[in-house]
Length: 213
Length: 197
Image (cartoon, rainbow over all chains, first blue to last red; front, side):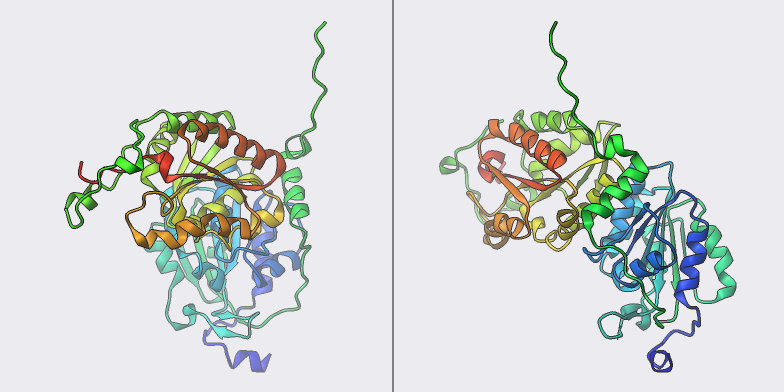
């Protein structure tokens, strides 16, 4: 932990796992889209749910997966929980989402200012790039960045408030123990659609054609 | 629509102002309307696009239908991700783009392809028939290979009368077999542009 913290440029002492757990404790029937890597493992580690989409490919796409889902399911809250590196790769999607303004979409970035999985290289957010500022300038009606635990309750309210919401949370790059979710794409897909749409829609059967009398 | 034979199309004088200002092609034949009818019949609810002149009529038709959500993207890979999310949520989606945009989609295609999530893409071609801009050639010539290299099913079509039936078949393939399917609408079919008009 000490060696990790020497690389930590943010003043934030917040640890990511408990924050993700607190966010998901309030999810109700919300649909959850993860980013790649650590946010994917965070979401699985605090509790599996068929309405979690565990993202294993397509870096930069998490917010737009969540956008497509939010437009398809306007009555359900859609939560995108991703990381700073993943969000940086899809900055244009903030412009697209700000134009579409899905009121049920919340994007939460667990911003540890590092690409932890690839060797702890720093990301742009550790050098002054303000993701919430970019989201605000794009037109997100709610866009905030928090760096202290005292601000978390208000951020949690915002995450479940009217959207589109963008919340950037500065967290420690310290990595809690990770449990990796299943990687079978068709399984993740079908489990999600079964839970959300029901098997009749997710896996329609073909009835015999009626015979003329 | 006047489908011009490329052999006889009026080439503009290089450097003429209208060369650039009239760059939006007028696609006036029935095929975009027929493609729209196929998308409607396929139950498409989300239409994402990076504009192309060849798609302009189709985009207008989709925008006029309140049952279709049209979304303008900043880059084509957003549409791949969006189509994945749409399918998870029970909506059918189509991504409209130009061949140059195919290059932007390749890594993102890994997700729907590995998940066996349907993804329908309609691609208007550049750089493959009577092209004037040499910078369009690398991606235009590589479009099919790039898509196929990651497992996309590709249906090129050059005859205007074949475009809508091909789109219908591609939609059927995508949504019934869980595949990423791209229809490449040839420059020959879109119609050559009269840059002097």
